[in-house]
Image (cartoon, rainbow, N blue to C red; front, side, top):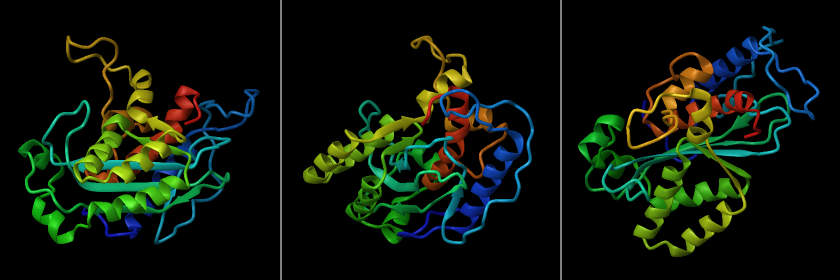
Length: 268
């Protein structure tokens, strides 16, 4: 399941997201209660009137939250695996996003894009084992980072929320890539935009929902859930597709957004 080219969406994305949305609406009753306009889950099974429409060049996403006020841009990157995590010092090999406009009450359509990024000369064996991306794939089928970043910023400029699983890492990788390439004006533009949008981290928001036992004595509190763990907790099944492909990860984050909001009672 390889990434797409510039501005191209896949029909499989539509079917995957439609299935998620239909399942959610079949299983949950999102009737409005006296909570200031916020819908809460009652647990009663209610059918939906009809399946969501099928569109071959875009993906259909479940409404993010009743009374949604945020148009989301979901981000994910895959990296070469070299360098630290805090702050991220890894180079980007795949860059994907899904744009999700404000919910109009009838479902929302989001355009998706995924790019391999040229320029990486080697990849750490651990990272290669996870995502399977090689420098040759990036150089043969990829685009220059500035092209992908420019398109991403055009989408971010039209959104007021940025969502990612482990947002600090993904945004940090963008910052590091911009610095490494000497794109200082673009870095300043990114920082200005980030200061005015809501950044949603599904990993942090999902920690209290999953309540996983800590696996290291160095840390206290609950373990941060992986994206697969969060998806299993919220939707009761495995993600639709192999994770560690940036676009698949974006779709999985998108599938988690609304049920996560319903569980936390926080409009994401």
